Amino acid sequence: MQKTGGLVFPLAEYEGRIKKLCAAMDARGMDAVILTMPHDLFYLTGYQTPGYYWFQALVVPRESEPFMVTRLLEASNISARTWIKRSRPYHDSDNPPQVLADAIAEFELAGARLGYDRDAYFFRVFEQEALKAALPNARFVNCSGIVEQLRVVKSDAEIAKMEQAARATEAGMRAGVEAVAVGVSENEIAAAIYDAMLRAGSEWPAMAPFVATGWRGALGHATWERRIVERQDYVFLEVAGCYNRYHAAMMRTVTVGDTPKPIADGEKVCLEAMEATMAAIRPGVPASRIDEIARRVIAQGAPDSHQASRTGYSIGIGFPPDWGEGHILSMVRGHDRPLERNMTFHLIPWV
Image (tube, rainbow, N blue to C red; front, side):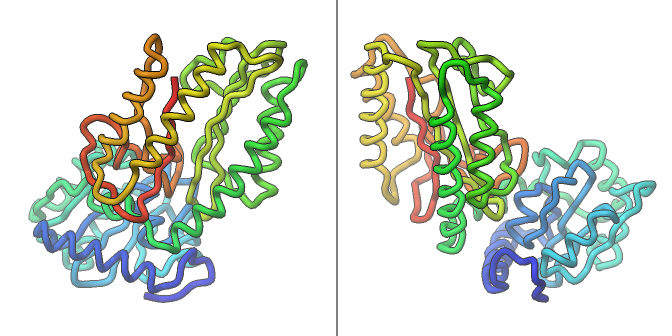
């Protein structure tokens, strides 16, 4: 590994991650893995760019140096931000899967057992098929989740990044709440959130803050559309600051004017559910158990209501389209993986 000035963590952090990945590869009989998700590339190498709408890949052999294939325009991010020594950039007029196949052959993996992330957002079916056709002697096996299962348990260094992100989140949420007033637009509230969050050190987050007022506050994942706040409105806010691509999220509802009793009662139940779930969170408890606890509290305290989604989700490295890691692990029925020390979650029991 070579040290560069743009690395987010010390080299030892990346060496440990690669070592764990190679152990997972060995256990599954893989000679190398082909990774394309921006989260995984960042986790293993420090590489980041918003330009992952163009093809990019990291190949990690079990017994030799990793290498990358990216658009030529993005190659500067390899040399400046990562420890990777070997890369094969492609021109905009090139065929990226063929460039990747050529690199795999060049580094003597054309007949290897290759893991590939079949479920990756940014590895399209036609690219997978083109790569397989270009490497007829390779044995391709699905390795989806092989890095994500490492990412879900954070190191102490990662926790420190998330604490920095949380400070920006708190600043943004505080500014958003203070901006709510009759006659103010959703856009002005969003601007206050962004201004405070960025001044507190946040980078561009993986999702925009959610700002929805009045009737729009009941819509799933609605955000600002210029609506003007009126008296007795409810204002829904959800904010996540970002620090070195690590996120921490917060959700709040603001009432304009007097808080009606049903809303106050709902708030009380949500707080009770939050306290109950936080008391239950400890190593060894299945993630699904936390969801059961929240739903029981809500069912007892608000029998005429219900919780429409999961109770919490893993959060950490984020790139659009999501700041969460809920596809890796959520607090919901069916996700029975036991909790471990240094897992991180956004808890969202709500009615």
